[in-house]
Each structure stands twice: as structure tokens, then as C-alpha cells.
Image (cartoon, rainbow, N blue to C red):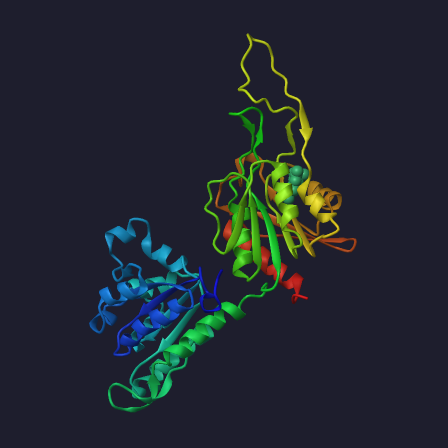
Length: 409
Ligand code: C5P
């Protein structure tokens, strides 16, 4: 069980500790952030390393400390890009006048500034410097630039600074920074209080102990949707067919093989508020499953009798525990729009995500071109989105779901 004090477990903060005497408070900050359950990864700038050692940062964060943009081991896998993306929040604390200026200007001359440019995650700066420096018009202008671009600024406190001057410039108190970070995770969760169910991947329908009927679904899109729903605060159950994708973070994943197992797991997870059926469920399964490997016999043709599988999307849409929002997918090779509209009506779901899978597109790839069809009364609204990564499709679909769901009952 996750205790209240560890309620941010599984979330990751990338903490950039820049130069300044307040860097020593960065060490306490690491501990306090970790007390909430957060995983803390750290970048120590060369300025920061004048005040505290990488060893103490590594020991307190229990993670490798990143200091150098040109580290060969890190960069062999485009380390700075991964570092910038594989977190949920970037926190610069203490933020020196120098890093604030470089971020405002868009410089990328060390690891910290490069990561700040490369990240697609929210960023917060907690400035700390001499009061006269902070009051300087250049610094104020840079902070204003960052604010306007949507960066969070954790206002410095008033009081004595290490240089003996009194005024505004002290790093905000560590517990206050931790509260702001916790609030960010807890309040920025528009689907908190909602439950969601996602199906993903293919199903494998056995024919004999070694063979099955399957399909090329990678599970990338469904898994990304499950993770995006969880990031938005929903309690998510992912029911996944056999895939190579790692189970997403913050999600309860149930692994199944066949369509019938997938249906059973879906029904078990009801009631939910949102169901997204992204799995490529096999429409048919062999009627008989041999308990021995089927052998060739001469050159005789082999025929296979297939029977229909249950339709999970239709079952959920017509269930007496119907989720408020049911989203289906339609992978079509031709006449996409026409087929999708017919499918929306036939299955009884609310929205349908149409994607064109003609010519080997989509399956296993990282990007997707989709059209979202939304039924509202007798009307169907359709939006075609420009090609984007499956993660971005997931994020935008979840944003649309947030707008649709309103507040939990
Ligand atoms: O009919 P078709 O397979 O094209 O429909 C695709 C949509 O229906 C997808 O959302 C898929 O997850 C869902 N589906 C299902 N159970 C089936 C077949 C499809 O949930 N047996």
C-alpha cells in the first residue's frame, strides 16, 4: 500500500542544482522530496559542484548524478534528451542568475541548459541569489520572460542571505518547495477520482500448443493511453495482450492472451468511468484447440474452422455498467471514414479513433495519423490530427476526455 507520506511514489523529478551557496540546501531538498515517494534524478552544474560534491548528491538521491554534457557513457544513447524527457517535472533549485539568464536566452552550453531546452515537461525555477542581483533589471527581465513562457517561479524568501545582506533572494524554504512540488502533482490531475480501463495489444488465439492466430499490434498506442490517463490522475487498469512494451508506470496491468480472457478481465474491472478499447482483438478463433501439435499429413490441404470472438467494445458499450465514456479504435485500410461511422453506430461507443493501416502503416511505428470521431446525439464531429507520436496522440486524446468528463461525482 502507498502510505500518505509516499503518495508521490513512482513520479520522477529531475532536480538541477546550480551554483550558489544555497546549493547546500539542494541536499536537504533531495531528502525531503524523496520522503514524498518521489524518485529524484539530479544534474549538478559546474557552479553547483563548487559548493557541494557529486558524491553527496548521488548518496542522497541514490541515483547517478549527471554533470557533463559530453559524458560518453551517457551520450551513447542521446542521454541528455532521455534525461530531459524521462521525468515528470524539472526543478531548478537553487536557480542562479546565470542559469535563469541562459534558460531565458535559450542557450545550450552545458548539460543543465541543454536539458532545459530539450525537455517537454513542466519546469520550475527556485531562484536564490544576492538581493541586489535579484533586483537587477536584467535578472527581473529574465524571470519575467520565463514566467511568460509558462515556467513556474518559486518566489525567493526575504531575510538574511549568506553574503550578509538582508532582502529578497534567499532560496524559498525547503518544505515550501516540497509543498509546491507536491501540489503540482496532486492538483494537476484532472482525472483524479475517475477509474479507467484500457485494452491494448493483440490477442493470441491458440490453435495447438505451439501455434496461434495473432496480429501485428505492438500495444504502443494503448499503453501510451493508459499511461497518459494515469498521469492525468485516473486509476487505470490496463488489460494487455502479448506485447514487448514495458507495463506503463502508475498503471495496474493485467496480462491476457485470448479475446475471451481479455473480455473477462475487462468485466472484472468494472465499474469504470472511461473505457478505451485500443486492443487489436482477434475477431475469430479456431473452433477447436488441439492439445497436440497438429501434424502435416501428406499434401492434403488443411482447413481451419473459425468461430467469432466476443466483441469487447460492443459488450462494454452495451453493459448495464456502461462507462460514461467509451472509446473504440478502427484500423482501416480503405473507406476509413465510412467504415468508422458505421462502426461507431454498430458498437455503441461514444468516440472512435480512426487510423489508416493501409500499406503497413501504424503497426509497431512510433507515430500515428488519426481522426477522432465523436458522437453527440445524432451528430458525429470529426477531427483529423496531423501526424504525431503515439504518446502525443495519447496525451491529446486524454485532454479531450478530460474536457468531456468534467468533475467526478
Ligand atoms: O470491428 P473492429 O475489430 O474493426 O473494431 C475495432 C474496435 O473494436 C477496437 O476498438 C477494438 O479494440 C474493438 N474490438 C473489441 N473486441 C473484438 C473486436 C474488436 O473490443 N472482438
